[in-house]
Image 1 (tube, rainbow, N blue to C red):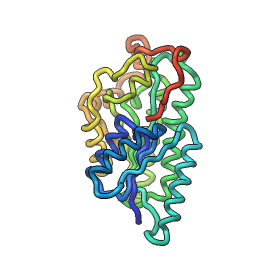
Image 2 (image 1 turned 30 degrees about the vertical axis):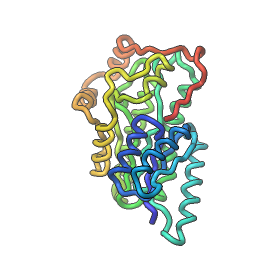
Image 3 (image 1 turned 180 degrees about the vertical axis):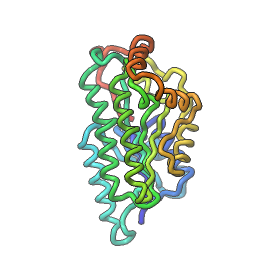
Image 4 (image 1 turned 45 degrees about the vertical axis):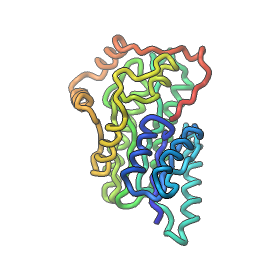
Length: 281
């Protein structure tokens, strides 16, 4: 059976780092890296494949925002399975990493409703669908990693929809872990705080180039993979993040939302002055 890993949002940031570390440290016959930006995917595949004696990384260009991209990926998986079913008993998804997603800064009434709906489509709808289409190919020992956020633990002013979508991801992931335990399938939610990726550039519509106080993604990804394969349902790399998540249980949700709205403003270029950007990594 052909053992594959599927990583979405893999054209930069943590998605790229997941691809690098999975290729270096885990034994998969093929790693599918999925995103919109084909040029980036091909470059990453070339770099990783150069370290191997076979072509392990396969770029897959798809727009996963909504349901159509999910069905297109399902079609590709079924085609691959049918091609191999007679000679290798088909395919197994040994690892699914749902990393594609984005956020946007600013009060809800001041941000594009189109952008907010795209965020829900990608962060929630696509992630849910990808878990669903993967289920027939998941076997005992398979692992699902869903990228949530430290924002999942509380409602945030100036970040309302993003925090809500990540709260969904965390809740869904923990419930799915319980449901799939008897099948030997592990599900883990990655809940990072500030990590140095392209996130801030997209969330601020170009006004901020880097995440404030962001840390490099390498250690975050390494710990997440280790915890996910060990069967842990969440991963928060920094002690500060773990303390914040724990303390969120004891603070009123409205109080947090009100405080962050008043005191945690983030820069953002108005939507109408910017051309539509690539939002999926």
